[in-house]
Length: 158
Ligand code: ADP
Ligand code: MG
Image (cartoon, rainbow, N blue to C red; front, top):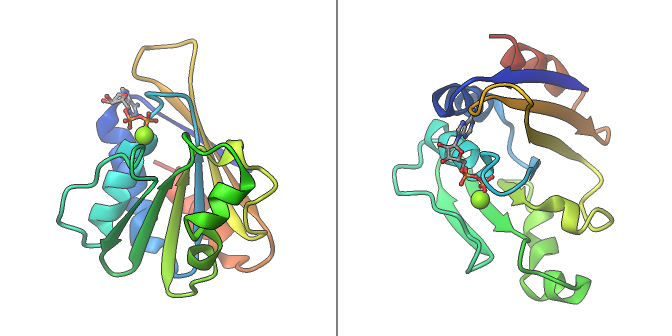
């Protein structure tokens, strides 16, 4: 488990950008955090690092957006889903099995038992400090890529 703090949207953007530069294909990235924590801002900057030039918006209403960059990004928002069956209906499992893609999931905590075994889990929390301070907790779950831990450690140091 790794932790770091950011003090502004720009710092969160820089953190996400650095992760985007290093993230390997086939990764599933979960982003937990309350409304306004910074999940979508994180994905926007991650996508920019992967060469996506089109606007990245929250997929709250359409459940998933696809962006073509160095990797194809499948950006899910599970906020509005209620059942496991709905998850299956939107093809969730086909995307998480794509070794050439990058799956990013907002509100993964709605379906904790349905997440693929291997994933990066990031929890974003407001702090009791300044209004723009956020605490990021990174967990690497599963066994796929041990070297990623070192990369994440570097990404967190700034
Ligand atoms: P979410 O997708 O988690 O609901 P958004 O990324 O849409 O949240 O919005 C985050 C909001 O919080 C933005 O308006 C952003 O400017 C603001 N904000 C303030 N401080 C930070 C920070 N340190 N990191 C990320 N966002 C921040
Ligand atoms: Mg969002």
